[in-house]
Amino acid sequence: MKPLKLKREIIHAAHILRGKSEVMSCDFSLALKSATNKDLVYLDPPWQGTSGKKDPRYAFLLDYDGLMAELDRLNRSEVPFILSFDGICGTKEYGESLPASLSLKHVLLNAGRSTQATLLGRSDITYESLYLSPALIERLRTDNIDENGPCATRSHAQEQLSLLAS
Image (cartoon, rainbow, N blue to C red; front, side):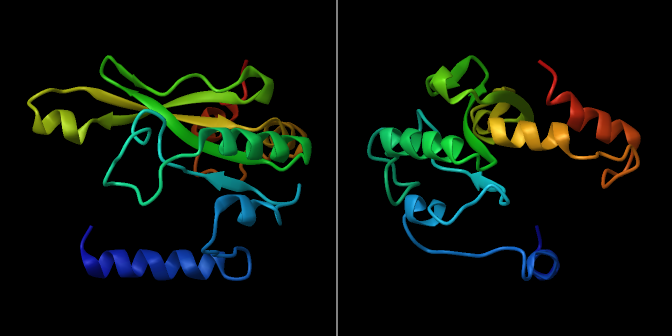
């Protein structure tokens, strides 16, 4: 994205989020302590399988057990959250399954052709995982969702609702 367009996008996003969000620079567990069931938490830690060893892309390695404990605490507090955590690229799967005890809804999103694979002469497709918390699923089921609501078209609304299908 060109710098001027990026600047416009950032300013637009800041305008939309003003008074509705908070930016913090601290350990994620400290930031999560203030989350309530009125919030929506989005977590995007380093993926499993890419941060279990020395990796120059990340300042800190993933504390898997700490993350699982925080997800469990969020569930017990009924805080809605979305976790982006692992995925598949070609035949390689990144990460192990999350504990079933967390009762997370797993959704695979087609993220398109892998840039890294393209550079290596392959055409692998990347699928990124999103995990939806039970509190978020419940909120989506109980909210009054207008068919003409915030989605641009009915088909987009149907796609979003299909995330909830079992």
